[in-house]
Length: 474
Image 1 (tube, rainbow, N blue to C red):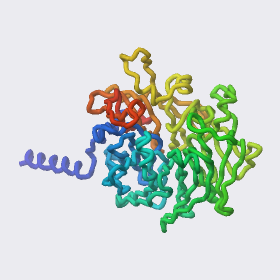
Image 2: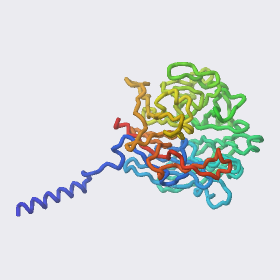
Image 3: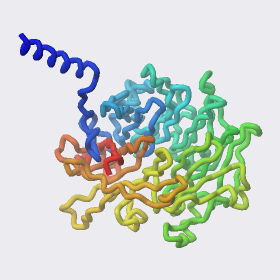
Image 4: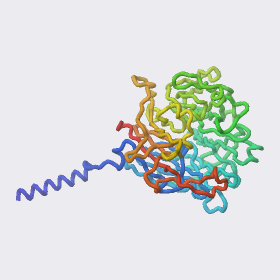
């Protein structure tokens, strides 16, 4: 009887331990330094991601997946770091925009913008998918989209300018409850007769307002910084995209108090490499913000001017309360080397992805280099590393930490990363192109450059993966 009672007692204790949550297994992947999730097992035509990733106040990472397809649009997803689960919130933004059944319409193929949060909602925009002539001419225009995290409900604000895309800046003024968007013409006739416009969208009413033309012709701005007074600051991308006759390091600002867009000419800092070497005069004429995030409640912003901006290799703080013309408003705070969209702030640490060799980061275009395979005559095994620099005053301030190459437990290697986010707990979220272990993971990409009508598919030698890097396991 004593033995039987002891067995019953031990069994009760065992099940009590389970019910109290004392016996838990770690979520799948959480014990790995680099954990990857194949996006092409969901949709074969997703072929890249530029911007469009963030960690929200609910602790989850939200991100887009983009394509150049003429038959499938962008996806929108959520990753839960507690369970390591990826949830598809929409597998095609064309459907969210109400255009899936419209004959001849191109897809809303990209979430090529920052994602902004306000009052429990996330805000972002769509971008055209197929860049060939027919796609551009038929494109109805980019949409402003809201997503309510608590309910999973989408809100389509509609198209600010018919036929225009949003390339790619949007931002939310949380006090005024307004969204700002940078409208870009792609049709030849619109580029010839018009140009890029700044728009505002009232969140409550949905009212859209044209705030004026920024620059004639085709243009691009990647990020807006809205300061604590509601002023909207931005720059124009130049390198490899468009030339602006009177822009050599200009800073633009829309002030709601005056309802005007002002231009501060040639005020952005001159470029400098990580070793202090000055960049070339050609690079200096291309100065622009290529990544930024507001800090200190919007009073200041942290920014870079990476390899597709002016060639500068430092992290900066911009304080609009200080004198801009004299340069006092710009303070360099860290030497980091070249970076681009693959930059994120997590706590007091700035994370970024670079090729192992910095000269490769300065000269290579990852979208081309990712196509190389070991059987290519010019193949080089370029390695991408996650690195970071502490922005906190202390012993490791401005010292670069190399968290190692982006290689997962099964040997897949990152080949292009243009979307990065980070939280305060040492988790870094990465979306990009990786080598694959099977054709099931490979991207089925349209060959729109070789075939102008976009009628040709090709199974690429790489696939799209969402990844988590746990820097606590360094």
